[in-house]
Amino acid sequence: MISSINKLKRFISNFILMASEFNLRIAIADYLYRIAYMLGIMNSCIGKLIVKNMHSTKTKYLKKEYYYLIEKYHKIEAAKKISNETIKSESPIWVCWWQGKELMPEVTKICYETISKHSCHHPVILIDKTNFQNYVDIPGCILEKVKNGHITITHLSDIIRLCLLSKYGGIWIDSTIYLNQDIDAFIPIETPFYSYKHFPQDYNIVRGKWSGYFIASGKNNFLISFIKEMIIEFYKKHNQLLDYLLMDYVFEIGYQQYSTSKAMVDRLPTEQCDMNYLLDHIIQPYNEENYNIHIKPSKIQKLSYKIQLIEQDNSGRITYYGYIKNQYKNEHINYSTRI
Image (cartoon, rainbow, N blue to C red; front, side, top):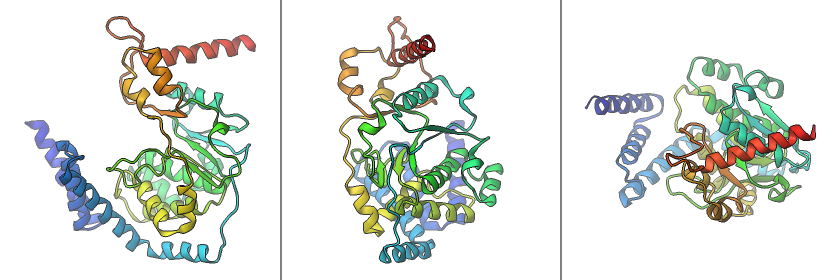
């Protein structure tokens, strides 16, 4: 009973914040979405209508609020002042763990190891709270909002990744990506843009067209620069987040508005493997046949440090997590032996 009352209070508080920061329509659309999610009706006809309405309402707000930026990039596109920079064989791989490598959870260290292992000739650069300003200039007002708690570290990392890619180009990989294949085997060198494209999910506005946790581009890429500029303008103005997936909303606007962006995204291959298979089964007993069918052929698997991980189940059987952790340990031992 107390839990339900507290949840209702949070809903009401969030509704008031959204209405005061943005408008009543957004507050209502967001509230209905939260109710649909809580009730587990997202895939029902009513749930899909609620999701569609929320996407439409928030997109209309952003397009109206930042029409001047949208027009600016229409002019850039019309004048053909678009960077031809592409992803290079030596383009850096950017990974971020705010607290630094030494304080990574074990599963994040395993993921980071796979990224380093499959990096080919790309230097892997770890961004943290001590060095990010060596690479990018984040507006002081945004850093102040991070300090005051108006912007989370998660959403600061969105800004950092966009600034890094826009300034230097390269490949952004979230720190909880388990990389299964050499990076050059599936990211075409000399292409201007790449992101992990997967099967559509109705509740996500981008419907699988890109993955914010795995993006690559040449420097000054048209789409990346547009997203970066709108995201920064948004955070300069607002203390309340419009949506947790704000970057996806801005991406979708860039995709729909500009033929240049649409062409870059539409040429991406749609991946067939389930990138969540390992996470969905990570504390279940390891099965070699299933591993070879579902995990080994995949380019990436998306993991999480936010769940309780076990190496063995109650019967003493090794789990998928136990298996990948043993691989990680063995590779470290082999590396030490070579040294």
